[in-house]
Image (cartoon, rainbow, N blue to C red; front, side, top):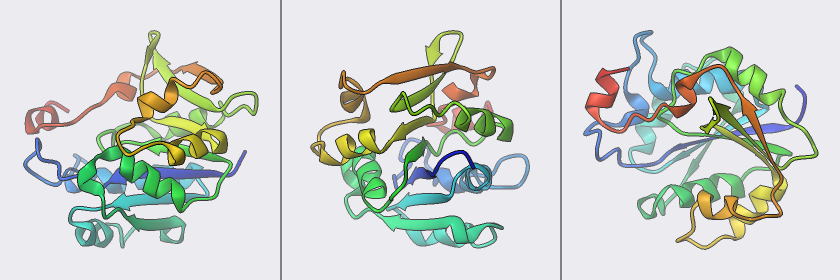
Length: 194
């Protein structure tokens, strides 16, 4: 591994627009969204933190069969109803790493080679690495401890977008070869169109 990297997956929300628990939706390969993401992150990260909230026991149960489960750590966010940013703050506050790979739950389809190429973009001259496709920014995002400290110190009403405005954060944009960095599955019709 190139650098110490912790994966952060937010899996705490109510999935209200989906009408079903998004992390536990199944893909064509029979794996759930969360299983699909965790399996790939354990290949490139030293540790994977899964921030839970709503139905946390079901999510933990779903990941019992993962091969590299010694790399997985569950963190419960009791403020999950206050939004995603509180889950990100909670996950980061329990982590100690040089870099963090921040991943949304609704991007289960990115291929493994995306992650291996992505982590190779880490460069100590930057604090933030973000994939682009045809010049448009997507997710997941890699950021370092400098950015982590700014996220943790931010207010509850802030967002990652607010933190990203900080001019002292040096950003690198990496043009990748997949539009799956824009995947955003919020409703059942989004899911059916996958």
